[in-house]
Each structure stands twice: as structure tokens, then as C-alpha cells.
Length: 153
Image (cartoon, rainbow, N blue to C red; front, side, top):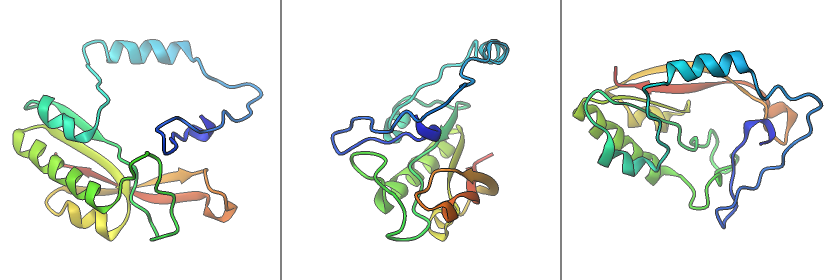
């Protein structure tokens, strides 16, 4: 992926260029072995957020990394998935987050630092973290921005 970007077209096919790297540092064996030991008894599942409700149990940890809400209406790229992910989907995700919280799961989510996102999670812990943005057609749009991390613990 180019700069770590994952995106699909309207047919659901991956469509990001590979980029051009002289000496990519892809395999770091010592780090892979350490991570392997840490994750030995962990099950990681990737799925649509709606399906998590059917599987997650009390004390499970659930992390959501949805398509981020646009920082500026009409000025942000929103078609990372073939079905878009806008207000309605963000609201449904917040409902799932709340249901998992009531179930006793440990839930974390990251998203854009916007009023809309913050208002979806009024009863949870919100933290701001700095994130580097290297992907933007305009060089002026690259750099550090705030992201919101929402937790129920």
C-alpha cells in the first residue's frame, strides 16, 4: 500500500498503488518474534462492526477503526469503502459501542476530532492524540492533526 493507505473502488476491489521504495524495511524478525509471543493466546478478528455484537463477550477487548468522519464537509475523501461510511453509519457504530459497553466489553475507537464524533460518545472517555497525515494531494494538508480516541474504561 502507498503510505499505508487502504482504499477500494466502487466494485470493492483494492485500488491503491504500490509506491516506490528503494530499501523497504518490511521484515524485522526480532519485533515479529516479540509480537508473536505477546499475541500467542489472542484471537484477532476482522469484521463489520455490526457483527461484533454476535461474538463479543464480557471482558473482551474490541477496537474500532472506522473510516474517519470528514473534517470538513465536502472537502474530505469519504469513499474508502464501496458503500461509504457517513453520519448514519457513525451513529450505528456508536450504538454498537454502547451495547458492548453495557455487556462488559472493553471498547476503544479512534476517529476524527470533530464535534459530531465527540457528541456521539458523551458518556465515555475521550482523549486527543497527535497523528501524522502524509497522504494528501495538497502538501499543505500534510502534517500533524488531532484524532479522538474514545474508551469506555
